[in-house]
Length: 163
Image (cartoon, rainbow, N blue to C red):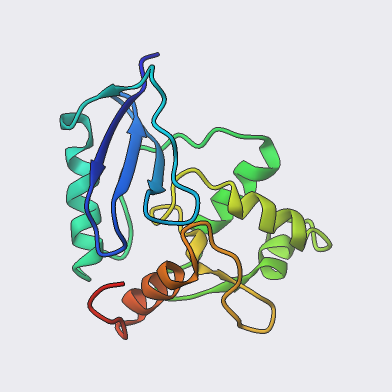
């Protein structure tokens, strides 16, 4: 399978889109503390990501609360279970790592949920930014806490204009 990539600008900086002709496999914040390296075997292609760009534009404009895109999240079963639980957190709401652990049937696995959350390959669309500390604090985010705060404020209608 030939992986394709493209970039798109957003209020949280440049986003790297990775996938194939069928599905989105990755969405990475390139301006954050851990940018994704573009693999030499990936081919640049803008057209397969037109729908992703459109829906991201609507989301950042406050016109979309959920995404309708074909995704393929690859990882161990536990991580995929956590990522499915992330997708179930409603727009504008948050859940703690412990709450997610309880929801998926592993009540003592809050730290493992945190690790899986940090490995989410499709940020924003699979809303790992909606996971917070047990005390309600903003904790660890691969894109940086300012981006996490921005996304949460965007979803609750209290956002600033840009990072």
